[in-house]
Amino acid sequence: MPVSLVPPPPDAVLFRFAVLSKVRIRVLRGEDLAVAVRAVAADEHIGVDQRPCHVSTRTIYRWWAAWVAGGVPALAPALRAPRASDVLDPGLVAFLVAEKRADGRASIPELLRRAVDVGLLQRPADVDRTTAWRALRRLDVRTRTGTAPPLDSRRFAKENRMQIVLCDGKHFRAGRQGLRRVALFFIDDATRYVPQVVVGPSETAVLFLRGLHRVLERVGKMDVLYDDHGSGFTADDSHAVLTNLDIGIVHGTVGYPPGRGKVERFNRTAEEAILRFLARDEVDPDCMALELRLAHYLEHDYNRQPHSSLAKQTPEARFLADERALRPYPDGEELRRKFFVWEERVVSNDHVVSLDSVFYEVPLGLAGQQVRIARDVLDPKHLLIEHEGTSIRLHPVDLHANARARRGRTPPPAEPPTTAAGAARSGADRSLAPITQPDGGFPAADPDKEPPWT
Image 1 (cartoon, rainbow, N blue to C red):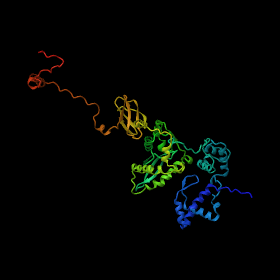
Image 2: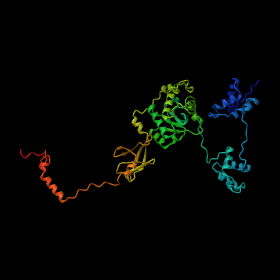
Image 3: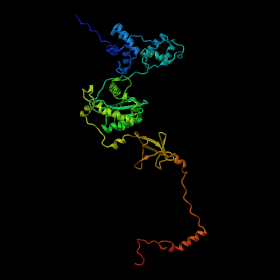
Image 4: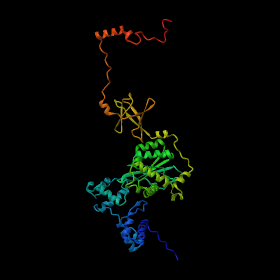
């Protein structure tokens, strides 16, 4: 007899049934239903979009009642007809939808003016443009002007180490007071090896570049750096340094799970293994102390644990077994120079330049000229200027010392006027020179001349 093929349930049904299965397991173990629902609601689940999520107790009770009444098919989401607006006329909404789909470059004000032309409105101001925009969005009508570019959402993975390094910030709490901290992890895409982590109070360009410098010192240069489009990665200093290093940079697209799946999976692992335990009284919230803790976890735990996507190999073993040659920087000074960025400034008449609202003194003779200043991105107070073939470090102006110093040049001391008493005293000195002077008043002998008695 023919076999009837039953289509599999949709992903939403499977997700709801997986949540209810956790509740059922706890109930079968002897827990009360209320206790089991609260425990499952406190857990983190992987949603239909492969992102971490939580389910409220009220929602779990609603799914439980539907499953008891109708089984797994009753867990299917209810189909709701899209509702455009409760305040706009349906004929006006239908007109706006038809015009927008026919002319994708037409703006909302232009659509309202067209509605006036056909008699659906008296004035464009009778309908708020935001209300019309929301009505179109509820009907899944694209409201941006122009044609949307196609999204290339293919999954990717590199074959060898240091071809792509993923960098992402994970926020957490530390210490008794639960201070805000962020950890930047540098993850090799091919091997999942994490060579470096840095910790700071916030995600800044200085924190990112400090971690990048350590990665380059330890394992060498990567081809491409992939980040999460945070402020520290998009800063001008970050782009300038990566350009100096000839490293490509890719900013991750918001809402693109295939491109961030490895990063999010690592973040969950780090959260469960160590980050959630740092908000304790005995933990030092100092950033350097937290870096030591996380570095110890990476070196002795994560990098040496078998990874399911690496055929049960550890990230460290896979990274060391890769035949692709690393590209370290043998000269530390050369690498350090890559972290200097150049800026142009005009020297004032008092030989001062301003940088980040701080005044620095420059060598004399450059007043009114435009100079190039090398700024150290890892140490904002470290500034250099090339002057007459020599690198000179600039120092801030001591404004308090200038406030106490005399203005202008100090005039040379004036010679005392010649008086009669002065002339008499000079004559006495000449007459008594053989007695008062150690050389007896005779001039010093010239070594280049022969004495007259020879």
